[in-house]
Image 1 (cartoon, rainbow, N blue to C red):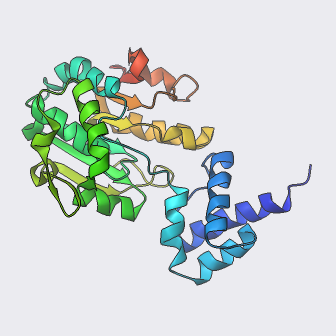
Image 2 (cartoon, helix red, strand yellow; image 1 turned 30 degrees about the horizontal axis):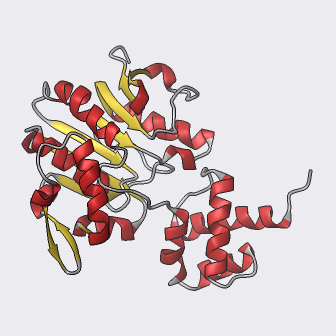
Length: 275
């Protein structure tokens, strides 16, 4: 069956982005990515993906805006509170046994999950021995994460999530209202590093005891999912933990045998000790 003109233009656009900007989206889920690129096409007033490709290649101001369509920036503090409660109640007791800890939040978006874990670890007395690495491919998201400023109208949801996650303090202890938003305490960033890292192109950068990569794998095709899980496996220390999104699973991964379910309902896995 012959490919449609749009399919050909779609693949050529992804190839152009890779060659011009070194961002590789070829392993992302086609249906989801094509839908978002159609939205971008409309936003930029382009008749076709080929027209959008021309803009991307010749107008340097276009790609930074296009990147917000290519990467899904949806997150919140203590998103899915039961996941964080499971980390607190089931994973933290194991983490306490390590003299020092490293945690990798892959696809950290604007930093909400990094700050959530920093708060959780402070409440559990583990902050001073922990480094948290928040990585993403979107520079604007990383800048927002570094700033730690969030809209005030999101705070009630964040507060309720924190409470439901088993929070041992008030979320208001960690931020002040300023600049028209909620500015989170700079001390929470003392043990956090935000940096660019691509699950599609980059390699392992540190040995960690916990990887949290939630609601990212669903945007990848099977081959890229396997690559990402392989990176997590290689970065985790013996008996380390991996948390993924509620609609994600390792069951069909090439690396499934390297993990065992730890908290099934919250999609938390533990790396087998013999791997």
